Each structure stands twice: as structure tokens, then as C-alpha cells.
Image (cartoon, rainbow, N blue to C red; front, side, top):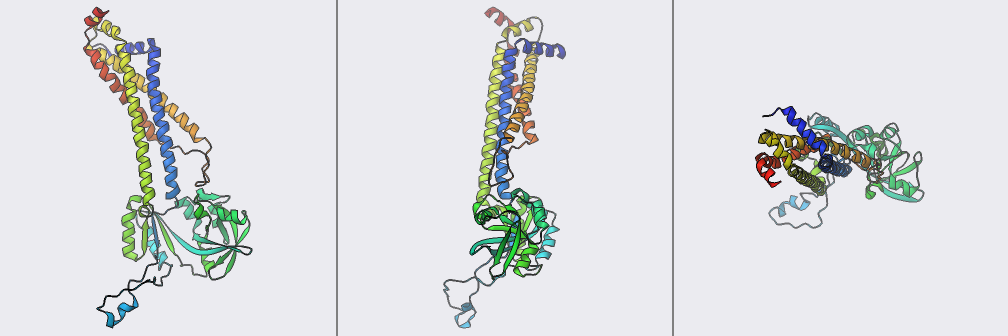
Length: 420
């Protein structure tokens, strides 16, 4: 067997003397890998943005007291009708407090769970936004702004303000953007809040909240939880909702069932609450990866065809090499080296091309009401996509060079020379 340095030198000479063919083969790899990087980065980035639109606003587990119809009606308590079949129409729900009993002990208990990332209390109340003689129905949610910003990215949905500004204001309100438009209000103005009991409170606007869902932005606003408790005249332990953020979202369903049994409360997990969205997200991801894999396969066949033609065009070189003493394995290695070099160079250029165009897309202006702080198209610069890209380039070119080089290995130089 000839020295590998000599074989590598011959491979380099072949590539450089046929620079146009080499460049064509390398560009085939470059555009294939580049297209894959652009496609998968943009599509997964877009999918992630759509997922965040729901996931950032939805707790993994939502705990609350649900209004339910009375299981036992007064007629069932009357002994004379004990063994009778009773039909009761228009069953009314029983009196049930919205307040979660022992909310803070429950919060402290859940916070000790090793799978729990954060447990946040909330206080929801029906209110009226008062503008002169006009009263607009709405909802005021009492929150801990800093924790909401930490675990549910509240700042991403705040326009002209911040969670910190709300936290530092004892009478501040984060007003829904659509409410502000209807009432022609600006940051720093005061808005009158009326409760169902008829009490009116003035609150200072410290920012606008924009979820991107018009039906939400036209009714929903936020204030400090203590502010809402004061408005409702309730004590500091008055909590209506508990939101749980988990480290592993897949455990939400089972944990929600355990919470319901343990505390006799309604616990809604994120998968149940957003079943349709979860299905749509899975289908989008499936399409993204299916298209990406197809793109790589098509690129692989293109690489194979180019290298196959390159080897068959060098039949005379193969005959000469064998005639001067190179073995079939030496000839195979020469073309294998060429294929791997083309794959490496083309793959690296493909990564550079993909990264460059992805970066360009990432800077194209894109504005959506769903995410007010998103200003450009979302692109996912996941390092693993680049590892997959260069790995595929090397593997594809290896097999693209191996298969035709197997034929070149078995070629009889006498047949080639006789054919000339």
C-alpha cells in the first residue's frame, strides 16, 4: 500500500486541477447544508415564539375553587322521599367561596416539592373601569409583579412600563392596552376602579399590558396583590388562585390530580387547559423536522450524483494510477479523501452561509401584537443544528464517495486503455 501522504497529495492535486468540478461539488454541499440551517432555525424559532405566546401566560398547574352544582338537593334529605326516584330541574350551584382556604400554607407546601420551580398567589376580582358616566366591565388581577416577571415573563407583555414600576407603586395599575385606547388614557394618568359593591378607587397607571389577545386586553388589568385586597376590603390571606410553575412540564397532569385529592380544590394542568394548542404545536414541529430531514436527504442525493460524475470523469487517471503500481484500495482511498475534503469544505461554507442568512432574517423587522417586545423575525440559533449539519455533510460525502469508489477500485486499467 502506498504511503497515505502520497495518496492525500494526489487527492489534493485532483481537486485543484479540476477546480470547477471541485467547486461545483462543494457548492452542492454548501447550498444543501445552508438551506437546512436556514429552514430549521427559522421554523423552530417561529414555533418557539408561538409556543411562548401560550406557555408564558399559562401556569403549568392552575389551582382554584370551581363553582359546582350541589350534589345533594334538599328533597333527598327528606325521609319520606328517601326511597323515591326524584327528578330535580334547574339545579342551582351551592354557595362556594372563591377564596382558597389556607392558601399560604398550601403555597409553602407546594414550594418544597423538588419538581416545583415557583408557586405564585393571585387574587382575581370583577371590576368596572369608570370614565365619566361610562362604566366598562373588566377584571383586575392581584399579583406579585417581580415573581410574575421571573416565572411568566410579564415584562415581555408590558408596553411603556415594567413589573418593577408596578411593584414599587402601592396604588398602581397595569392597564390592558385596549382599555387604555377606549378611555384615551396614558401612563401617569389615573383611572377610577369600581367594585361590584359600589366602592370606587383611583389608581395610577404605571404601564400598559398587551397579551395580543384582544378579548383579554379589553378587560384585564393587573395590580399588586395587596392593592387588590385593600380595594376589596379583604385580609392579607385572601387568595383566589394559585399558579404553579414546574421544572418538568410533563409531570403537570399527575401532580394536578394529586393536588385535587389532597386539598379538595380544582387543579387544571396546562396540557388539559390547552389541549388543542398542544396538538397544533406537535404537528408544527413534526412538519418542521420532516421538511428538514427531506431537505438533507435531497441534498445527499445531489452530493452523490456530483461525486459520482466526478469519479467517472477521472477514469483515465484511475487507469494510469493502477498501471504504475497503485492498488485498488489506494485508488479508493484517493477518491474517498476527495469526497471527505469536499464534504468538509462545503459543510463549513454551508454553516457560514446558513448562519449569515439566519442572522439576516433575525434582523428583518417583524411586529406582532401578540408579543409587543418582539421586533424582528424569530430565529433559533441552536448549536446542535450546526453539529447535525456538518455531521450530515461529512457522512453524506463519505458514502457519496464510497459507493462509486468501490467501482473504481475494481476497474481493470487494460479495459480503460483499450477503450481509448
